[in-house]
Image (cartoon, rainbow, N blue to C red):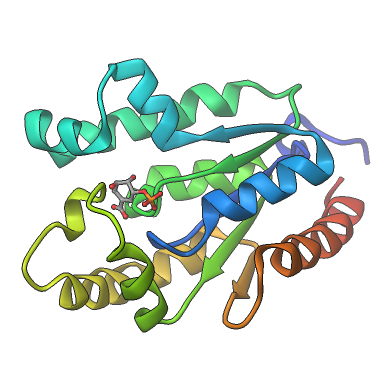
Length: 185
Ligand code: S3P
């Protein structure tokens, strides 16, 4: 049987995971190794809106940001011919529409990290509006518990990043991506 339009899976690698799970760093590492275009939904939204994520949340609200996020993803999903590494915002999995879309865009890797590691990494700057609150640690725990199933549903592979550096994570992703693309087209 020939490949139908629906079976087509572009050779993109998509990184999902909670804030501070290392998506941007691992994305850059993959970009360096493969030479694929590197895209980042947060950066694209900031460029399109001409303001920072924190300002978008403050001035337009989270729902508006989520709308931009979905629009951005739809735009990217249309670019079928390009091979890319896509790094996403931690909340991209909240919408079922996005979860389905992500999985059709390529090989989706969920970077998972323990709560304490995430709390430590995200405490170093204040550019994440959802964690700019008194009990940021509690917030991380609540959001992570809420989203875990969504990350699982939206991904093909989960990597527990504990004790691994970005080079090791990238190597793991490339090995399994090769296997995935050999078998999925
Ligand atoms: C968010 C994660 C952020 C950014 C926004 C909301 C979230 O991206 O999209 O602050 O809901 O988890 P990073 O995961 O790159 O920090």
